[in-house]
Amino acid sequence: MPDLVAVGKVVGVFGNKGSLRVASLTDFPSRVLELGSVYLVGKQVKKYRVLAARKHRRGYNLTLSGVDSSEKAKSLMGCYVSVLEEELEPLPKGTYYEFQIVGLVACRENGETIGEVTDILELPGNDVLVIDGHGKEILVPLVDNFIKEINIEKKRIIITPIKGLIDQE
Image 1: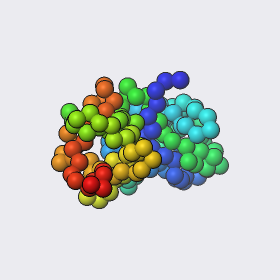
Image 2: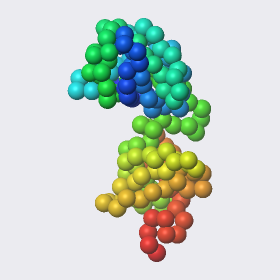
Image 3: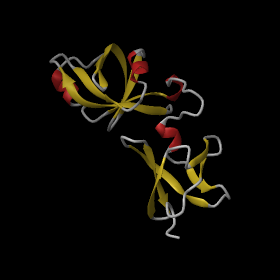
Image 4: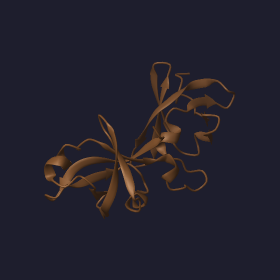
């Protein structure tokens, strides 16, 4: 199975001819509108040809081959719209997709392991890393003041915490 990345989630049906309403899971939803095919990932993984796609509010509407009724579309609710990793939009230097950061090992500058990044919370002010610090949930703002380095190749993120952010010192 190829490396797939979720870029949206089917959240509804649009019209009565099987169009899917998709909530975007990327800051670059326009790229999805240009693709010739996508994968829907649910209980099974199936590739679909994109017949039509258009932006809609915070997501997009997709019309896929073989999905030609609202009943078929409803059966796909909750599925993730995914693309091949190599089809993703190249990002500017210093910008990462969420899937690249989740799973990284968080360390202090001295090399001490803090834990593993398990999630990223998208909050109004800034995103926040959720780190499993050996059974303890640690929240670290994803801002330059706290993040010294993100190294995808070495699978680690170097954090410079302020006093009390991680330990109750």
